[in-house]
Structure formats: structure tokens, C-alpha cells
Amino acid sequence: MSTVHPTTGPAADAAPGTAAPAPSRKRPPMTDAERRARKRRRRRSALAGSVLRYLILGSWAIFCLAPVVWFLSIGLRPRTEIITPQPIYWPSFSLDAWHMIWADWPMGAYLRNSVLAIVGSVIIDLALAIPAAYSLARYHYKGRDDIGFYILSTRMMAPAIVAIPIFFLFKNLNLLDSVWALMLVYAALNLSLVTWIIRSYMLDLPHEIEDAARTDGASDLSVLFLVIVPMCAPGIVTAAVIAAIFAINEFLFTLLIASTQNAYTLSVALANFTGGSDGIIYNAIALVAFIAFLPILLLVLVVQKHLSRGLTMGAVKG
Amino acid sequence: MATFAPASEPPPADAGKNGRAVRKPARRRPAWRRRLFPYLLVAPAVLYLLTITLYPGIYAIYQSLFFVRFDTWTFVGLDNYRELMGDEEFWMAMWNTVVIGGWALAIEFTIALTLAVLAYRDPFIRGWRIVFLLPMLFMPSAVSFIWKLAFNDGRVISDLLMGIGLIDGPLDFLGNVGLARLSLIVTDVWQWTPFLFIIFVAALQGQDPEVEEAARLDGASWWKLFWNISLPIMKPIIAVALILRAIDITTMFTSVFIITGGTPGGTTETISYFIYRIGFKTFNFGYASAASFVMLVITIVVAQLFVKRFFITSRA
Image 1 (cartoon, rainbow over the protein chains, first blue to last red):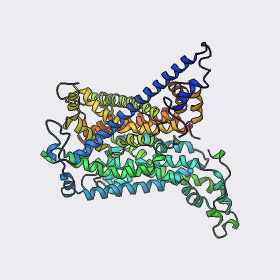
Image 2 (cartoon, rainbow over the protein chains, first blue to last red; image 1 turned 135 degrees about the vertical axis):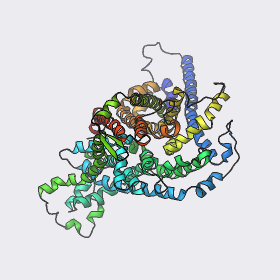
Image 3 (cartoon, chains in turn blue, green; image 1 turned 60 degrees about the vertical axis):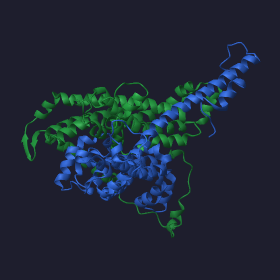
Image 4 (cartoon, rainbow over the protein chains, first blue to last red; image 1 turned 45 degrees about the horizontal axis):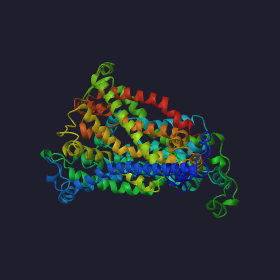
């Protein structure tokens, strides 16, 4: 990186000594000794600033990491060492939870439901969003901005508002407790997001390439799928990843729709790791949390550069 | 933006494709079909979204006029709305949502902006970003259990606070209004501060390094640099980020469901949880639908007032 941080680095040191007459215009000229002293003060305050800065960043890093490490230790300890009168910070190691989630709970079904619902919903989203985004980004027509805003505004709605009608909709369709219902709901919840992210990437593409393809006789649809889609692939991948993460996270609708292992996903299955009188089985919950965490981490690393743009639905160009 | 882009070559894929380049331009389709085309492209997405907004909206209005007991619907007119307006629990849920959400948003914003300003030119920014991002990558239900265990069941927070001598005995985080709300706020802050941090860092990194360098050589302090140069550039981005975060905070459900369940005495019940509880725990669907419809109207008004400006006008 060519620049340095405001409080540290050569710029802070160089400024007073070499070429900084502007701020001291009204003061009498400094002697050499004064100048050196000032330089030292600056350097010392820069050092202090740097220490303080790392102290703050470091504290927040610890605040981020400590619960993660501690929760991992919960997953790898026996149940008897979780809820105790005095918290145990150095527990004994045990894979009890690992064996338990596979033996006592249908983890396979939970995983399958999650993957099916998420992948299905992302495919639906892309199929609907790519043409819609193209239409919003490239054509001028009456009502375009209103349509765009309508699509966007569905993101503003609290899921709970539509929970009851959606519940009855699936009840009437006989789709309660099915992965299909989850797929359709996730797709609907994320569609606005996906459309807006892809639209933002399409807006950045130069018109010339499309125009050239059109002059060559390509139809509108082949321009879209053979020219536009490959060029905004990073945007499409980012949108897909963010939609997948939100789908993994979804809780309310899954809670309402799923009632057995036919449709339980990891997110809601967590809330079912209770054993009657045993209470909440935290070590199993912790392990499942990490099982879901790993693929999300991988996906996010893939799109890291585009993450800020995706999270703001295209408003920030990361 | 597209208009400033350099003229590009025609894509080789098309030019080279078995003589397509010499083929005659496609015959012109009738004007009405060309005008219809963009509508056809956007129609499937709009229709799909209408089924989760317009249909539920109409359904909620209709159902809110009935008293629903299992499969028997009794028409009651506007009674549900009348009852709702006088329902203390409903207003309390609104107030809780504002209090919990407001605090969480303010804290997240302050921390995220501070961290972003401190870190964005740091040589280890990539490392900080990954570490700070981690909480966001866990499922919200998992995060809720992490903090439920830390606050209540495992008493870890109490133990740590006792360890440094701040309190004498374990705290009951579910028995006290402030503490119960605090546990929801901490949960949200831990998981979602990264959301704002990532966006703010990207915005700060996006500014011209040479302007910064020049300002610094002129002797501007980092505070002046931030206040006079960075902040004005960031304002629209801050607005968008805060709007998105505010939307998600006001719809807070998972952590309430898992951590507090609305206790003590409904003081942590958010509006989402209220609708869920009335609908799916007491099965008073008509009443819950009335609450849903009121919320829908509020959402539409807020979206029209605030959101339209920042998303539509900022991008032509």
C-alpha cells in the first residue's frame, strides 16, 4: 500500500521537519532545538497513537474470537462440564457430542434439507434475477424505477409480517413440512437482494460490447446470456453466495414450515437439540454451529473482495 | 460508469462464431414487441415477489376482519384493530423494538466506524477483516445459543465480571429488564458490527489515497482528515449501511426466540416475536393478522420516506 496510516509512518515525521510552513505561518520562526523537540514530540505521540490503535483493534479481535474459541471448546467437552455451578475454562476433551449428533439425531437429513433448500433457492433466484436485473439496468421504459423500487422494497419488509399468510398458503398447498416450501420461501426472501446486486454489476459494463454483438445480429436474449452474463460473473457469484448465507441463516419461516426431519434445516434443528429433562444440549449445538460455519467461511473467502458491495446491494463499490 | 468506458472491441466469441459477423442484422421485430421485451424480462421476478407481498397483504387484511379459532372464522369487522390499538402488549413490543434496536444500532455504528478508521490503512487490514468478520459467519440461531449459554445457562459473563471484581454475586440476566435487553443487544452487536465494519472499510479504502496524502502533508490531523475529507464521501454509504442494518434489527426474532422468549414480563418482546406469539402460540390468527397489516403499512410508509431516496436516486 502506498500510503500510511494517519497517526503513524513517515508522513507524520516528515511533515513538520521538511515542508510544513502553512500551519505555523503566524508563529515566530522556530530554532533548531525547538524543531527537534517538536519532531520528537510528534514521533512519541505517533508511537503512543499506534500503541493505542493496536490496543483497540486487538481488544475487539479478542472480543470477536473469544466466544468462538470458547464455543468450540463447548462442542468438544462432555456434557457434564457445560452447565456447572462454576464455569469450567479448561475442560476435558470429549467427542461425545460428535457421536451423539450422528447417532441420536438425523444429522444427515438436516444437512440434506439445508443443502437442497439453499441450492434450489439460489437457482430460482438467479433464474429470475438475471433477466430482471438486465431489464432494470439496460432498458428505458415507463415505470422502470417504480418496478425497481418495488423489488427493492420487498427487502424492507419484516418476515414476520407475511409469516401468517405464507403459513396458510403452504398449508393450503399441502406443502407444510417440505423442503420445496423452504426453497420457494428462501428464494422469495433473497430475490430483491440478488436482483439489485446483479443490476449494480450490469450497470458498470460498457455498452459497446453489447452494441457490437447486436450489430453482428445476436438476439437480445443471446446478448444477455452469451455476452452480459459472463462479463458480470463476479457479481452473480457474489449475489449467489450472499443469498446462500441468508438462506442458511433463515430461522422464522423454517420454524413455521418445518415440523419434522422432513424439512428441518441446520439453523432450526439447533433449537431442537434439547433432551426433555436434560435441557439444552449445548455441545451438540456447538458442533452443528461449526459444521455450518465452515462452508460459509469458504464461500465468503471466495467472494471476499466483493463482499461489501454485495452486502450493500451494490451501493458501495468495494 | 458506462459512458466513460473506453470503446471496446467486439467480443471475439461472437465475431469468430462461424461467419456470424457477416450475417445480416436480425430482422427488426415489430415495435410493440420490442417495447414489451424489458417488461417480459422483469415480469417473472415481479410476479414471484407479488406472491409474497401482495397476496399475503390481501390475505392479512381479510383474515384480520375475523376471529379465527382453528378452522372456524367468525366475522368481527374491525374489532381486532380496535383491540390492537388498546393493547398494551402491542405497544410495548413496538417500544421494545425501538429501544433494543436503537441501542444496538448506535453501538454497532460507533464501534464499526471507529474500527474502520483505525484499521483501513493498517498493513494488516486483511487479517483484521477476517477476524472481525468471523461472528457474522455463524448462523444467528447458533450465535443466540452462544450468548444464551454465556449469559444465563453457563453464567460465564457473571463469572468473568466477578473475577475482575465488578460484581459480588452472579447476575440473573433474564430476571432484570435492563440486563435481558442488554443480552439481546450484546448478541446483535457481536454478530453484526462486522457488517458495518466491512462496508465502512471498503468506503474508506475507496477514497483517493493522494488526497489523503496531500492533506496529511499539509499538516492535517487524522481527525480533520476524517471529518473534512473521508466523512463527506462516506455519508451516502453510511446511510445505506445503516438503513439495511436498521431493517434487520427491527425484524429481530431469532435471538428473542432463543435467548429471552420475551421475558421478563414481555419487556424484550419485539414486534416480530409479538406477531409470532399471537399467531402461533395462542393461535389467534385474526388478531395477529391485524398486527401484521399495521406493520405492513408502517413498513411501506418508512420505505417510501427514507429508503427510496438512497437507493434509487443515488444510482441512475
